Image (cartoon, rainbow over all chains, first blue to last red):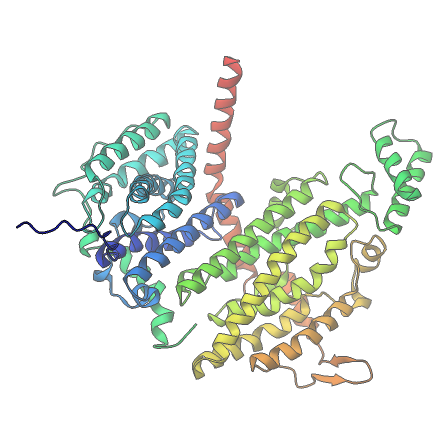
Length: 249
Length: 335
């Protein structure tokens, strides 16, 4: 006797907590960094654009963290080592070129990831289907600026070159598989390298040569190891909430 | 109707033969008639130089207030105590940048570009609302700004939706809708604090204590001391006097403060049956004039931050211009 084949539709699996935290923390932390630009952007149009991206990411973060628990408890009451975001997104804003390159690297990744999740049937599909449209705009915005800065003046070229190299070592971490996120990580990495390489080339820049993976690359954010400035960022973000335990806002 | 026709005729003539004194008189009377008939003056219409200058000054000051006003609130984005509040605050500060954009565009229709106006702001030749020279010391200040500062701004701005200059009036329609959302979020934020813990309630009361009087000053000096008021009223740029709007604002706030469970810091505040309005205590105009002169707690800080963001962003704007020039040339060569 063989066991009868089950014909019942599989019940959708609940969102895996670790995966919701990883994706949610990426969005939360990058949104926070972009929020630091408010009142400091180089041109008024970018005040609007950077805030818009920050708001989209914050919206995604709230949905994702809510899949893992209470959004505010998770954002405000975890210690640094419990955050699962990529080290890339916690990097300080630096100059506008640094912020744009960080966004180019991340939005290209996030767009590929969400497109794949949206096409699947997993627990993140509905969220990814909505977010992928927002992220397409973030990616386009970053690409357009990377072109203008890379192929603008000698100064903007130099600043963008420096940023592209400084942040390169954080990009390998994006493609370390996250448990519960069912995508083709290798395929995504190849698509990312091709796309970012093409943008850099059109921006008259070269693809950095430093390591993206291995012992001398950065990136263990998914394991809860972060960089120095992240602790200060959290101190600022969490201070008020933690000063009034149990209060509602 | 007759005035509308005359007005339009004149505006088409503006681009024809210019200059004769007789023509100017005709333009002027058509302009006056259009204003009297509550018609809108549009960018291509003839208008007196002083009317144009008054509008540029007022719209620029308004635009500058929007972008300087981002600073005291942005001060709390990174510390907002819940993700919901953080999203609301970010959206609000973003709206203010958007308002700056509409308003600089409205000024541009009068022939004055954004760069020129920003230069005047940075060099202190143009002003912004003095209210933003006060610091935001606690989270409750975000609520007090929404409730009182945006509330006062709306009281001032709703009549501007009927301003005689078309582009300004239309920008104000959109701005007022967003401002009323801002005012409600401020009220709601304060209500949550007022009904929260004892510390939160005290934080809300302290913020209202600090922001109340400066908010009343936002309506400008008393009518008999206001330099530009009479002419602006005649041109229908302005529709109500400073004191009239201030009284309207006080009357709106008193019952709202009661619902909030917060006290307005004025021992003389009481309902006057005869006038049908609330009486309120004397405003410290010395403080107003000192802050206006540059001696407020944050004048230096606000302008320095604005100027620094502009200076530090120069290379970005240069890069965008260089890129555009290169790629336009390439396009032209190919064509």
